[in-house]
Image (cartoon, rainbow, N blue to C red; front, side):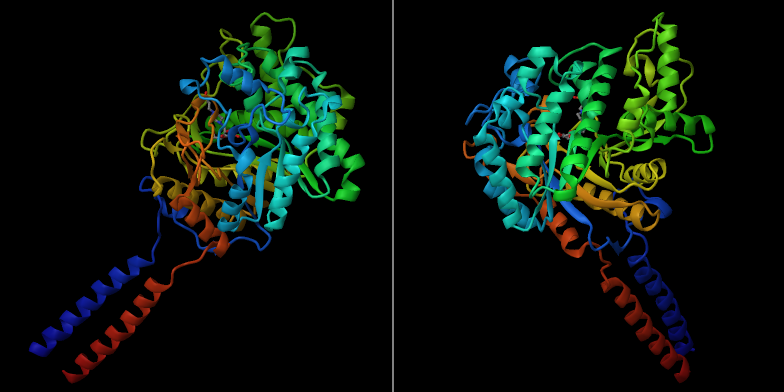
Length: 541
Ligand code: GBH
């Protein structure tokens, strides 16, 4: 009898332990709120062998040396110096002082195991007035030094030609992006960069986030040059940005590609717009409308057919008419321009940070002409329960990056895509154990892996924003995006490694996510032992 009781107890223990150990290797989640087993569980696999691991910065946000060695002023120098636009009137005058500390920065990249580094050239450092007759050899020398130091460390440069710091002279002369004279000047500048740096730079991005340039620079005015003219001007700016991009792409394609053998594309930014109810076709349409107004505004002409998305053309024309205007606020491309613009991107660069739910609009409103006032008209929000970063606009929603990569893949015929920015902010406190950033990178990179392995997206690289804490535009230094802490109160701007840098280095070293086998072997060993034990007990009965 006692033996029988022991046997029963053993069998029960056996089941209890199997359950316990079994749960050790069931699904793992990074965020408590995102715990749908089919969607959010961590996925174990590695990236393709040639996957490009990178990290990004931009000139105005890190360089400092705003007026050294012949650099001319940019619209961001003016905007910051004017006061009243940026948190506590912070400026990029010194920033991370990378102009003097670039070797230290590149040593940090080498420690991360980076294979690529995305940075931008300050147009007014190489051409102080913005015009081709003003070449500043000291400025050219700086970027030559950066590029050579990168290559010495086995890191390939990914170079952005324009990350928002327009030479002030071009804005003063003719209104910068509002005037199509900019197309020639941008092309001259791009050509100079191909000539001087293209022997070593094989990856070019013409523009960082034209959507932000047009809307934050000219519709809301919260970014330089601070113009607040909703309605038509932001679309004119967008038009000139697209034409400038196409011109530079053709210059590279015609005059440099055959010798230099690089690629050139553009980087577009967007949140993912998730239909709130995927069974409601109106929510699906709302998502599509929102995506076409963000990525499609620039992506459709450049990657699809040389022209704006149909929904943008019809909606803006209809709303403009409703506003009593004689013609659409969205400019038109000529037939020749469409042919010239079509397929001027060798890859699709994506900057992505967050996701929104969207639902269908009730009806069009004509009150406030403008992109946000009347044109997009897709109600969107972020759930209260989603985690919050230090930036009001940024809530981590890891599954969104998988959706947006698949959308790009389907919309643009399987084009090669690169995540050229992705990251999260923490508050301005000294804390090297940046748990929230670790969670963000781990979950987002894992979702990129799913997009590639499970959905077949042609994503070829991932870039973490940012290498360093830096000047976060209108938020100044109040929001930190870096994997390295920078002390902005110290003249030396010392850098310190945060835990997220170590996590990123591990992911790069493993080229993805390798399952920890300890729990699995515990289950196997535990089961074998217990089975043997039960067999022995039962046999002795
Ligand atoms: C990227 O833009 C930029 O390329 C990079 O330079 C920047 O540091 C990084 O993001 C982090 O922001 O609340 O009205 O001030 C991403 C797009 C631009 C979205 C700024 C949020 C703030 C709008 N972001 N924007 S506002």
